[in-house]
Length: 246
Length: 246
DNA sequence: CATGCTTCGTTTTGTCATACATTATGACAA
DNA sequence: TTGTCATAATGTATGACAAAACGAAGCATG
Image 1 (tube, rainbow over the protein chains, first blue to last red):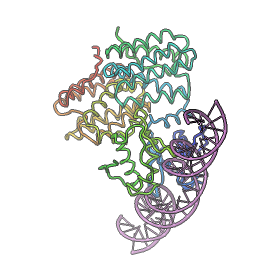
Image 2: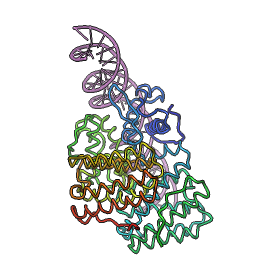
Image 3: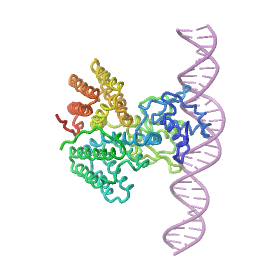
Image 4: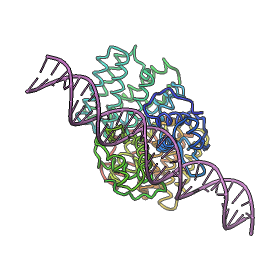
């Protein structure tokens, strides 16, 4: 329990937060179960109670736990966790196998991104479009694989920000976390030229303010991307596809 | 600054979290600006530093602020806030006018829910379908307006949970927060019969495991819902619509 | 003389230790 | 069965010190 994680933080309470949070996400504590009392955690990790309590506050804020005097601190059901919180995501990534995670992320993208692109076409300002275009150009100019993936991610992030709807932003944030853990989110290499064309199509539709075109271009982009993922990483990346009209 | 909020909590640090968090979301502090030093906040609110620090940890965990020795505690850019966090949502709801908020929420639903329903059709288990059906039945049996809306919300929440993809769950959570603040999320009354039929259509498609039917039934449902909202509350509820095929 | 670098002091957050308040649980007794 | 109370856990307060980073003063150098 509370196995030391690999991340090195400057703050002690971040480390404690990491170890406890990771344990919870890993499922070592079990929903509804109680954590050890604060004092016991202090001894286990050899830190002061201040630190443990601040870690607990952080976890409470993320919806992972719930504390009451006397009864102790209990793990809340996962439906109530802030599953899109960067830390929670990271803890998931440490434990769950990466393919399952990427498949779920891709499911979310498939559901959201076409609609987001449509909204972006309506609400994007000059700066938003410039950012999206910068992503395209970055993909174009990329020599290394890392640079290509980074530009790719920046492109998609910019679309979410361009909706001008803050509820889409946390989804954009997810990409960063994922990026740091693996460079394999996209499946570049063989299909770069086609991918570039399809990205430009999305950009052009958004720049033109054509919501429906942006939606459908994004569907095409994601569909082909899913095909690549299925080919490279396996069938769990198959998505329910809404056949785009032509 | 740090105006007292209306919510009554049992914990002192929750109150401090509320006041500071609310101030930040309200925009009283300004992105990049520094908060007053901890000791000063202690005096302002007449609490111990322990409490203030635990409140700060909570806010840090939600991505609102960032602390460094000597330089102080600064407000992070809103793109990095956990915008789907229940508390952040609540603070937004306190300040922003409710129509803008509901419109953005509806934009998100319009983008996500069709895809979520498609996924639910594939992954839902018996319990999931039972929950969705319970939502339908609840709408059917509802006598009061509150009961109808509550059942409606339960129905839609169940769809997100039925995806079996935890990244969709935070969106379901949003409905709870919104429900507590206003019963007007749906626009019931005149169109109850039609709404009920459309909800059943979604349920049937999911129960039948037909992803495409579930998607299109949801699009129809949301489109009509948006029409009602536009009629009742105004044009800001107009959505980019993906004309469903027939 | 002006400019850049180093050093050091000060401010603010980070951590520790201790004491006490508050509250809900669970056992005991009426 | 119900009410009361001891108890164990979290909640709050206080005071002290550590660490880090910004800024100013001083030093060396052009």
